[in-house]
Length: 257
Image 1: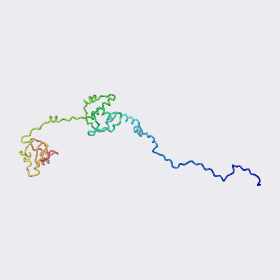
Image 2: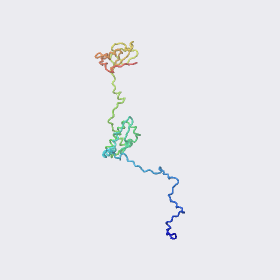
Image 3: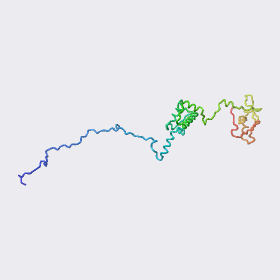
Image 4: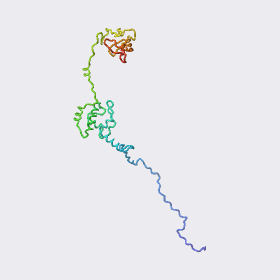
């Protein structure tokens, strides 16, 4: 190639090695990492479906609807009420349109709590609940409630005779026969009706014991043992005019002084 021949060179194709390369633009980086506070983020509301609204597996909706209808009846409380002495406990007091406590408060304003109810008051409350179930739209006043319960007699109430009635019906026993007594003192000598020996003075421990019978006569220990172990007719009471047999269970027992 001749040296004097000119060469057409484009300036864009010339590489300048003396120039410094331009810096590469990089995204800015922060000196400290960003911290996210999880506690400051509000929680999403969590909706809980009531147990009665959740469909149960293996049960039809007709049965569930029937249960809800029965709970609205005030008489449905009675199947879960338990009477424990002076207390009445209800396990379903919050179910139904009206609770048991509301019925009690409206029917008995002076009643302090359910634990103060007596068996008679419980029967009155039972009658009141039956009345309201048969007359759902009728409301009675406080005086009407008292009038309603004034003639109410519980079906299970039993009549207990008073002390005066028991005294009036008491029939005293017949007087003792001749030669017998029902009260004696220290000066009176008592004898066994079988062996006719005085009671309680024998040196024998067995014979000195005193035994009473269900017919009201008293024997010494030896005669009582014979009567208990003998067969009829030897086991008959030896007292005059008495025909009781003393060889049965609990017919004769020992007395202690």
